[in-house]
Length: 105
Image 1 (cartoon, rainbow, N blue to C red):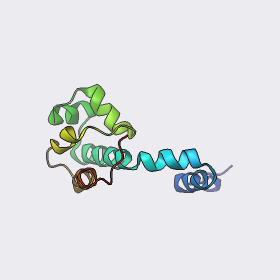
Image 2: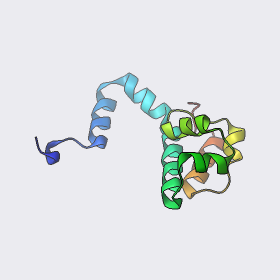
Image 3: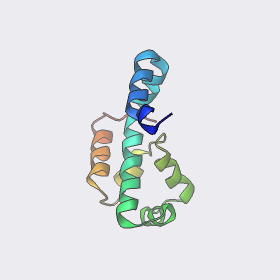
Image 4: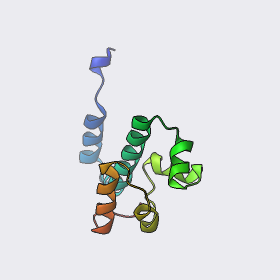
């Protein structure tokens, strides 16, 4: 099998979302947490930080920070509001949280 024969992640997720209501519900429920995870990983990569480094900057224990990058855990609003100005993506996640677009994860 060639690499080009493999399905892309987006295609797999779309198929599962169409065919499996439980998967679709969970995927939608964790959307904001995944957006935060992507923003945090991107910020770390852009600034050459390890998880430990960004956890320290944010004042979080490494275990709690790692859960954020996992993309299935949404922090409480007080923690989210206390994040320093990171990338625009984190600000967007904050906005989603404040406007009720965020489901608790």
